[in-house]
Length: 161
Picture 1 (cartoon, helix red, strand yellow):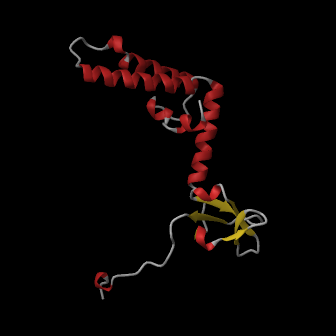
Picture 2 (spheres, helix red, strand yellow; picture 1 turned 120 degrees about the horizontal axis):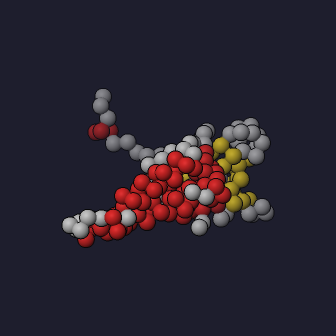
Picture 3 (cartoon, helix red, strand yellow; picture 1 turned 30 degrees about the vertical axis):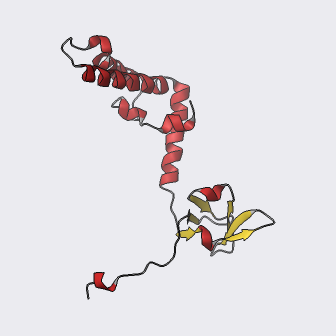
């Protein structure tokens, strides 16, 4: 399973659990949900649509247990979740347009000067999507926007004077 596959869902939420739950608690929550949603445990008067929903939920619960019930895959999932959280909450000092960066033909990178005298470097492949760059000499970071950062005109009628 790839990293993207692991992070598509919050597997703890699927089991109604939290990352601090021990393996025994995770197992108990899995077993309770597996019994609740197992297709063979549904009432005979349950509609086909409800059975399909239960089967889908049962599959999700089973997948969550496969990931969280094994120490190695759980550790990998927890590390990837944490890395994702850190990327999302990275402090950004400025938002820069790709157009504001200089292209260096020799190095084949985009360059933007930091206020400390260092540089932000962005490879051509990385320029395809918005990203966060760290300065090569200090701890400052910038977010690179691919969209146009031109000045927006303000409609005078919309201003309250």
